[in-house]
Structures are given as structure tokens and as C-alpha cells.
Amino acid sequence: MSGQSPVNVNAISRKTSEGDCRVSHIRSFLAMTVGNIFKRCFGVRDLLDKAKFDKETGKHKRRESVTEYTLVKIMESEICKVAVIGVGNIGYHHCRNFNRINEAKLVAVADIDPQRGKSVAQKFGCHYYLDLQELIKWEHPDAISIATPTSTHYEIARMLLFKGIHVLVEKPITTQPEEIEKLISIADNKNLILTVGHVERFNPALQRLKVLIHDGELGEITNIMARRLGGYPSKLTDVGVYYDLAVHDLDIFYYLLQQIPKNIRVHKLNVFSEKFDDSTTIFAEYENTNGIIQVNWITPVKIRQLEITGTRGYAELNYINQSLSLYERNVSPDDFVEQDFHEFLRKYGSLTKKEVSIEKAEPLYLELRNFVRSIKGSEQLVVKPNEVLITMKIMKQYDH
Image (spheres, rainbow, N blue to C red):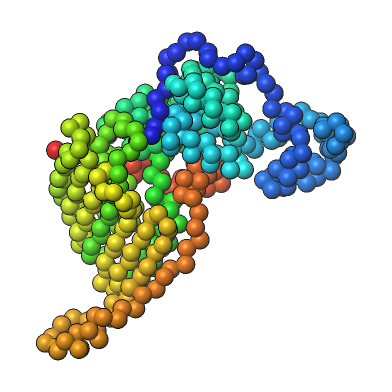
């Protein structure tokens, strides 16, 4: 994933300022925001009646059986402690969004760049570690998101799962299907949540489109085309556009169609890079649907679009501005007869277009919230690892 940062898993020296790990969070929990947190997140109003806040001291007075210790323990049991590994471009946004989730608390970050890691930790009020083992030892996180280069994903995720930690891995989780199978097995055996950052599934426009397709608004889907184009990422890692970008759209095709392609043709180009494919086109043949995927790093304008044709209409989706347009079919097979030019314009020149109302939201926020809520048992996991395995097996099979 472009913009991700590696992390040293095996470092043995701790590079945090002295005493950082032992700083108690009790005061921050019991300060001015405690009432709002309880009322908004947990609804424990009766406890607040028993713990009167003293504005002069900034503490809660102990009354009856409810003490500061009791309040903190209740809070800790309700909040999911999370950490982020790799705080480059995407990892930074993981931190930003975890800070927005009421049910989560970002306790630490890890990165091999101390300057960047400390800066991010300071901005979001958590601890920085160079050594992932030390982070786990001192912070005891419930869950960790991995935003490091693809080649590091498997070993880090495997280690975390064995330690009993829930894991979200940025896409692609790994390019080796057998490694995904091993991670799924570990997670299942330890009853842990394992998921992957297929963020486009959480785009509100796509979620709405999926409902419309399910309800038959477009009829039978005959063609589906995805374009994911733009310039070179600021920092290349270890995969080209096939695994970095096309993985999104192959996952979306499966998500919408619930079908495995019968055949795929992949055409890769190395336009500006000798090491990575930077322009790739995929032709996918499904049961009654043809699909085309175009991905590249060479287009000067950023494009993220999905176009679907069905027997009853046509849909255009823009992932960036989260817009969805529907065009109703206004001709039938009987209309394809000899006609003059004016009749042609009348039928094809004026289409019935409908802009679908979308309640916009940041997909990454929705993705991370779903991860946390799946851990808490309040939501079903949207991106299941077995589905990720299906997509990666398809990609590996046709990667020639």
C-alpha cells in the first residue's frame, strides 16, 4: 500500500521517553469529559449520580460504593484499546479515525521512523514505540491495525494473532493465498477478529448501489466497469497497481455480483517503472456478466468510478464525491427498427436520470468502526477474511 511505513518487530531496545509507559490515564478519564462519555457511549447515568465531579480539584468525590477505581474499570471494559503499526500516509489516517470512534481508545503507535512516530503520537495523545514487542508488553492493546508494506503483513499479523490480539490489515493482506489461509486458521482457533482494509466496501454510495442491485432496480447485470486511475503515489512500496489498486475492484465485483469469474485476462504494462506494473487492464468473464477493470499510476487526474449496465437501466458511481446516478432504460428491443433521425434523437437524446440521495461519510471511519464494533459484538464484520481469500486466489491464479 503506497504511503505505508515498515516497523521493526524484533528490536529489543525501547525508544520511548522515560516513564511514558507508566503514565496513568485515570485523570484524563475522570476529567471534564467523563459525564459526556458515559451519557453518549454507555448510558450509565445512575453511576454519575453517585460520583459527583469536583470542579475545583478536577476529580470525582467518592460517594457510596462508586469510586474512581470502579469508574475507570467500567470504562476500560467498554472501550477497545487499539494501536496502529506504521504511521505513514494511511496509518496516520487510521490514527485520526480511531480517535473519532467512541468505543475505541488509541493507546499507541509504532513506526521505524522515530521522528514521524513521536509526532503522530503527540498529535493524537498516545505513546510511541520503535519496538512492537514493547508496545504489546506495556499497552496490552485489544486490537491493532497494520499499515506497513505488504511484504511485512503476514509475519506481523501472525505474531499478533498468536498473542490474542484482534487484527485489521491494510490491503492487500498478502499476495500469497496460503498465508491468508494460515492467518484465518489462527484467528478462528483463538476466536479473534481478522479483517482487511477493503475500504471501498464502506463507501456509502456503493452500499446504496448494492441495495439497488439486490432490489432489481437495474435488472440483470450485463456489464460492470471500474476505473481507478491517477498519478504515482508519493512513496512506492513493494507491489504494483495490480495488487495495490485492482484488488479493490475485484473485491467489489465479488461483493456486488457474489460470483467468482469463469475466466480473467490480465494485461500489465510498465510505462514509467521497470520494477512495478503501473498500468493494468483486466477483462473478467462471469456467468452472465462481463467486467473490465482499468487501474494505473499514469493518469494526471484522479478517477475512481464504477459503471454498471443492467437490463433495466444504467448506474454511474463516483467513489470520490460519493455520488450515484441512475439512468432508466427508455427503449425496448421493439424500438430497434428503421427510424428517421428525428425519431432517433427523441428516443436517445433525452434520458431519464435520477440522482440517488446518499448520506455521505468517510469510508475509513466506517471501516475502523465496524472493526471495533465487531470485536465488541455489536456489528457483523463487513469484510470477512474468507472473502478476501477468494479475491486473492483469483488474482494469484491469473497473475502471469
